[in-house]
Length: 355
Ligand SMILES: [Fe+2]
Image 1 (cartoon, helix red, strand yellow):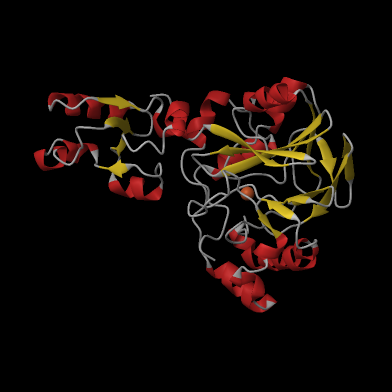
Image 2 (image 1 turned 135 degrees about the vertical axis):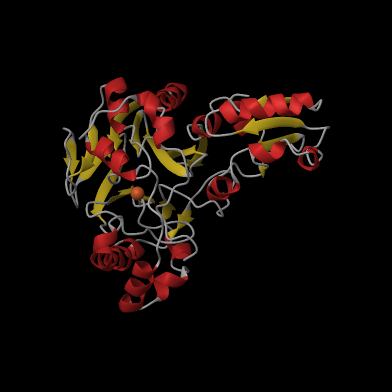
């Protein structure tokens, strides 16, 4: 089964997703609702009997090889099953779009296997794409469907957990790409700094420098109605400093960005983050919050000293392949697009989960 098809059938109660990786890999990252029987255990009769005979069975592994062996093992026991094509690597590339706001229009594009969020903001016939994800062709499809032109391509910060499709989308559209002036780049781009503004359609995007996750993280306020905040603030928590060795300094910057910049925005400002945690539920498929709601996060009611202590004290594992992904996003090394699924395999780890 194709990963896109699977994404549309996740709520199908007739589906039984059987992940055949080892249990520690499964507990680290899995497709919600899937069950785990490691391939080596699948050959045991007592495990075979756990598999429902009356459901459509999809076998899952990183790339489809182990899952293929699993289908043979199941077939020998008279159980029909299908392999998830390209496995979890393919799953990690599925993009879903949903209408997330009107006037100006916001379309949220989610990489559902990773909880990465990107946004298209449309004003009249102009569209700005914020934090585009691979495969970049998805944004062209959406722009075509909406009858708009992609006029600006922007990242909020140098991502460490996924490959930015900004360069690829700029190549495909011929539209300008914008990056933070306050981060180090080995690629050419237009650079954005605190206070700068971009006009598109009849809307205005205003840039705020909000360091703390990375030193150059930018947040974008559109028409004083929406704020696209990258990985500084989430629906369920706050961002984590991206450099562990400077965690204390970054945590202090994070506190300042949150309390003295973002939380000063009007309470009804709609907040669109660049990720959501696996425990967060959407509202009608949209992952967003408001400044008022984020003020309820316990961590945002701590003193600066306690905030820093808590942020520094939480050890969050670094995203897989983060060093290589940063080098690609920075433009230091070139990318073969076919490597993206493997590079991005695994969960996102940008937030301080549970805080
Ligand atoms: Fe990030």
